Image 1: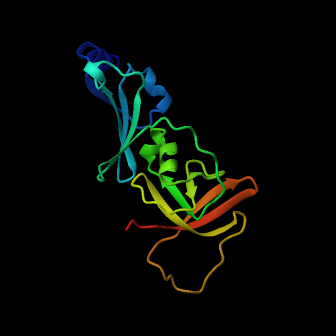
Image 2: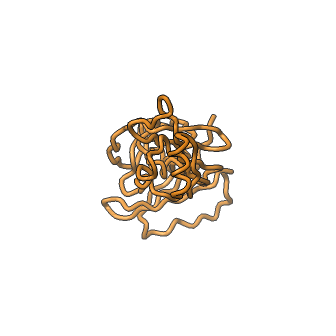
Image 3: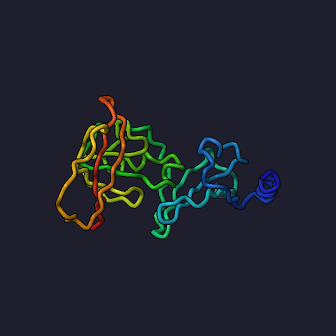
Length: 187
């Protein structure tokens, strides 16, 4: 790593590929990169790339830019310097941000895009009363909320819907709950 950092310092530009699990807070200490880009493919973070020499005249900018790029869609989201959004109670829709968005620390940007906020006790899950399509999070329509200690009711009916329900465990202030939701497809 020290050799790679010395090379980009000497040339003034270049890129360094790193493991994707590197915490966003560790990036500013890695040689004054201009941009840190987390790249995911089909919802799995593949790598972190530090880009150097992108500032005006090849000089580093004032602050490192954080970016999440999703492949194969080719969608890219850049930090806009937003404050952390307020935690919200459950709305009609849940959104699970792409892991590249989470690693890049861009959950606030997605929350703004969906007119929502972090779900109380839901970790990186977001919630909104509106359905807004974004390539940076998977949208789910909440179909059931139940106490986590209560098992789901057994049904003798055959499955009707082609959409598969997903369960989310949430630790709300009133106690743990299980949310059942179905993915919402774009279009």
